[in-house]
Length: 299
Image (cartoon, rainbow, N blue to C red):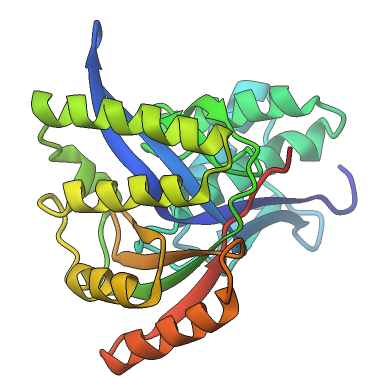
């Protein structure tokens, strides 16, 4: 086993757009990721001391899905690693909408492969990691280093984008948590909304291909509004007011989380001033704020 292999997967600030379309196979759920630079999950293997074989472990001990990913993939590859502990080092808050669980699963699945077969081509690693992830949860496609459109219930990549949006997200956490698995078990679908989501999918695809940072943010706002009857955001009215006052481009939310925030772009004049004023306004409303940088794959 190589001395030290560390695998890294970034978290997200919710989703730019999440919804569903209707076609020959019925309702098909999709999302567009909003990966951010500041949040990441890293996984590494640490052999146990001594010669006695011990049960495979994981720290933190509550990362059960990540442990299952390693065990499932180990079995499929025909080997075990019972004398090791998987160490996850993550700054991604849990059950908030930052894709913490998906990031842990994918980082750990990649670690499983790289620890035994370090020369495996990246596309093969990704395919194997996703084959396990889709057995454990619905989730985002987080293996592209930028915005991606994916089939939300299978992690299947639809389109990987290379963009120059230069977004800054000023976020608030409304408190509490959302159990994603339970939330998705009750997912009402509507043909009328499916048609709207299909239009928004096309609009966002066009905006991302054109680096239209303002149009992409407008789609994000529309997605937030459409989803507000499903998981209401208490901060939405305040965010919309501050958006109008300070020239924010739009609103981005976690569709199955507690996050919401305003979108700015470094393409905007006075970007830094706008962001500072936005944080000040939100904090005067009683919110605690954080800023995030959209992670982009460059052209």
